[in-house]
Image 1 (cartoon, rainbow, N blue to C red):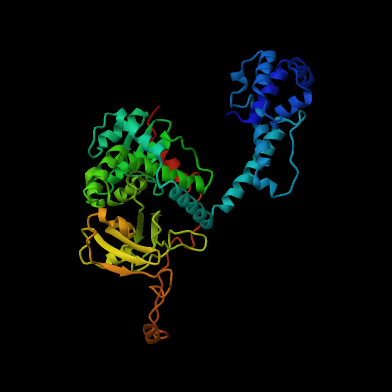
Image 2: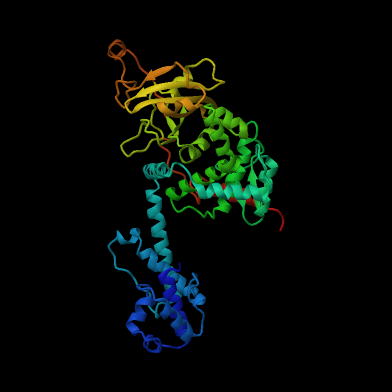
Length: 477
């Protein structure tokens, strides 16, 4: 639908080109000049009959009036000024709006728009704090919970791409990923000097997607990174205007990559058969599609509620107990701060996500029941290792649904009373009495605690390094 302000500018542009006044045009279409003024200023939308009449009098088509582009560069600047002055950044100043007049030169208008844009940019930069990022991440987590962690339109988009390249099942190959990229006019290029702040770089001018030459053993990471870069193009992403948009884009490209590596139709068929046999297992799901354990567990959450009628939870926990990724719609007590943010919070030490670290053998999945204030939950946990040390991936369900999973016969059980601090956060009184004032620990500090959020076109990306990289690799045109 065309923006009312743009439509008004287009009507004014064609009216003045036809050398008609407001009253003159109004008289010919049966509308008062004051009513036309409201339409041209974007305060009222014209009826379809009036729009057709205006087009006929001005000698243009309705499609020309409804074109979403401003009719001239001057109109574009006037519209930009209007929108910026209607924004929260300017309104907070309590200053009157400046309306461009015919006597205002283009240079003066351009200067005003430039000043407003800079004011808006600084205001948005000021709120791009860790606190804002946490609020945005929490809002997205709650929204995905309401949607059962499913994005069906992206599932369909992934299947459409696979059908187009003749995918017929099995683990997705690097060649197939390259064919998907080629359909969009892109070539995958592997380089050793990617900017340190990027996972991949897409050259939109020459149609190249730059990737590192090696990744997670087995190549799972390379396929996923390439698919994420492809997703940005398929989903029409632009430069994010804030952390909320940046995080939403990250969510969507990760979802597309997983949906392509584990297509919905085949994945659901596989899981339904396993559920019927009461032999669901993340490790089998992982191996059937040749992906990482984390990808398989998270993909399971996309499909479990909508297609298998299962409420589930997913936790990625660092060795120090901090949550780094979480999804739940089964009511398991997830630790959150005062604002409702979960990432970075410490998980109960009685949860399988942490007790799994105490096992001697970590090559197979660990199964555990946990009694909590919200009920009893069954979990399957696998330990992995990354650049930041070891982590655990936990996938689980409420007690009643454990019967559908391999490992449900485990006798291992823990009791968690968190968020009661006496569960695992507060030391036993005897231990506290024994060691208080008789010990001293030097605390480890996370490097990011005092670091400012990164600046750049994309959050976290070093623009200077990025553009130097592109210039270095740009082929001769």
